[in-house]
Length: 448
Ligand code: NDP
Image (tube, rainbow, N blue to C red):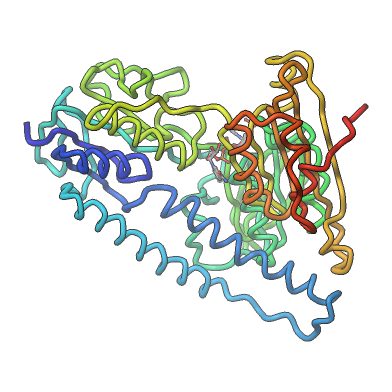
């Protein structure tokens, strides 16, 4: 065999698995046909967060007036943001290259196709490997209604040539909500359409309702039960006909209608790798597919499609195959955040799931105006919710929408993983004055 391990895809999961396996002494190759670092580094978490930072300045400029700051609001130049972002991503791409070079893993630039259970072809050359790891991630779903090709997806939106003064965003998940916040903060007129009655499916119902009430306050035109029927190019811009029989003309349409497993052209038909009914690769506890020499980690296997999950899976795979044994990835209490303004942060069970899992639960809820906005004048509220299993007193779900919810919920997630009870929360002294202290001072159960 040429290699012990051949990794297809240099994203979060693939690179972490490759680095660790090589660190344990395996001879490793990684094939990548696009960019080092995958979705997260190039068209996901990293550039998204940079754009979120950019979008927050406009809110800060407005808020500052109440605190005595006055003068003109500075202008915004999209090209500067976009190009600075590009530079930072190039720096990160190089770091990823160096990380792999540092452990003597071979990086092969090109699209890899699986030829048989131990052979991969890249650029016409065949490589044999004892094990193959598929870590090709996901790809934005495209719409196929008339004119949908005139819109962009979440890969393309980062590098628009021109800043869209008017943007229509289709979708009601993480990406749609985050980009609605980004473009709204940067100064676009944003309309967001969701096909169902309430967006952010999968999140706690209270959070979904709270977000639906809060996000339009900053200027986002949020519409439910609506899709884009067709798009036409006109001299004024893109004419979008919507399912509610209204029309609008915008400069850009962003489709953020989910992501699909990126298996196209992988050559899976040449081997015995089973897919589930949504096209994700099926794996067992050690990330082995139904073809014993082929493994898969990250977004390509579905589940919670998050970078830290892919990293954990990559590490677990490498440790199990090449290093000291370790426990399986623990999929409970995985926190996540939606980086809208303000953030949504969540960990553990939603109320609906907790009722089903534990039966008797107690809820604690709090909604308040953050201290900063008493003077800024901004009409924005924070919402927090604790879900407690009555039988054990364990806190099994924590949900928040408010400034820095992503940062706050990360800390709370540690407590939940450690099995913290409501009594532990109550016995914890708060940090005053913060919003987070509310989590340890919610005394009265919520009653309908
Ligand atoms: P999501 O699955 O979160 O949301 C997809 C949205 O598109 C849903 O509202 C869905 O509606 C809607 N939708 C699906 N198909 C159609 C269609 N044909 N027409 C109209 N609407 C449609 O996907 P995203 O693309 O937003 O994000 C993908 C994943 O990436 C996330 O689930 C998350 O795991 C990860 N991610 C994480 C982030 C973070 O951690 N901050 C940020 C961005 C992405 P419905 O609910 O009705 O199915």
